[in-house]
Image (cartoon, rainbow, N blue to C red; front, side):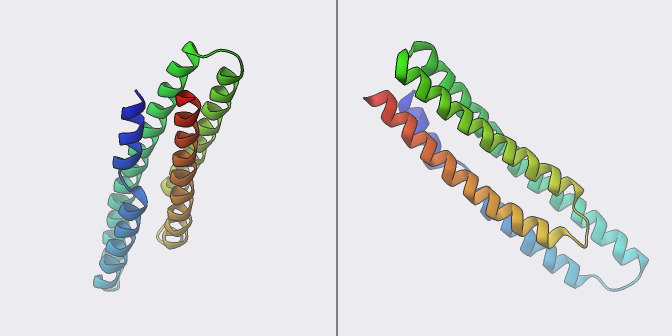
Length: 147
């Protein structure tokens, strides 16, 4: 179980790179469209595709978070005393990160052509912070279990 947690931390997909790539792609697509109503419609369709792709990346991250919660809960079943309490605290911290990602998904869903750049910039920073927090929590859990 610990090996899986270590390897999953190393090989987890990198959603912030995907999100930034999508931002660049979207900017290029916007620049290639001319004026007029049909161009707006094309840009909106492109935005919808990019939002869907971005949401898929965040769903991957949510799946990883849920796996981490399950692993911690399995360890909690076998733990007692202070170890159980510390594992519960770690699980709660991971759940907080899950809520943050769910909030980012809502922001992305609500983004418009006018707000997309700001939303994706904010989301990229948040995703990077969540990944950092998750890795720190995973290290803490590994250390607790190995003691």
